[in-house]
Image 1 (tube, rainbow, N blue to C red):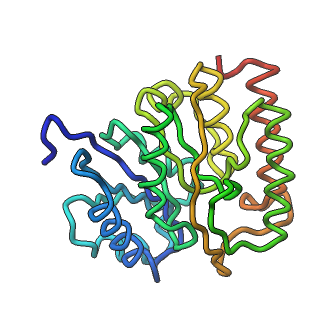
Image 2: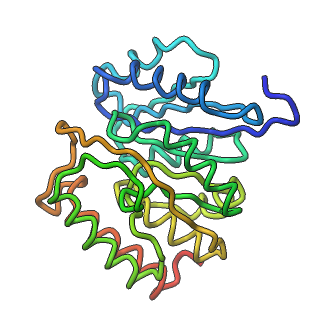
Image 3: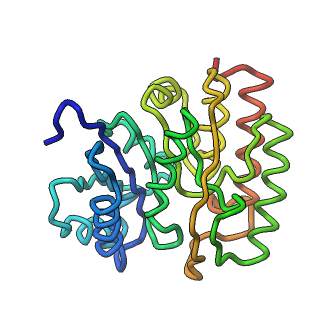
Length: 252
């Protein structure tokens, strides 16, 4: 149990169809946190199985650690829904999320924590386009990312080079303010969270470097718009967030 003078870091791991790797990934994340966090931090790992469609939940529950908590629900709802579900369970003063799978090295969490302290930040975003990030990342995805971020800067006035990486840390006060308003279930959830944080006055949003090794088995598909995981659909959902936030004022 954490003592009163320890901060708690909650790390949310959304997982979908990760039966083959989830146990290894959770153990790896815990080893990284246990070995990398300073003595000022306690941690909890909250794995949200986004739909009981295979053995992911069963495999995740084989991880024998009191710091790892597993939650699941029957139907796949999307990464945004899973992250919100986990945030409602989180007890930490700092709340992070990290994609399941091995694309992003979990040691990046320590780098993000360091940047949060250096900048006195409200939010720290792991950025593939940070000058010292280490990438093994296909050129076509880099092009998509650059084009998307240009649009984000124009629409939301967010001075960030990468909003879509699957690792971020928020202060609890930010999550407490924006969580009741969040509604995007799929991959545009990142920009919804960041845009709302800025909209509600949390402007200390900064980037930190990460290490990414692209997984060729990635579930991202590029067409059509009806596929909820496609960048085309993500762009469409992003425009909906802009319209409802900036034009209709539905998030007010």
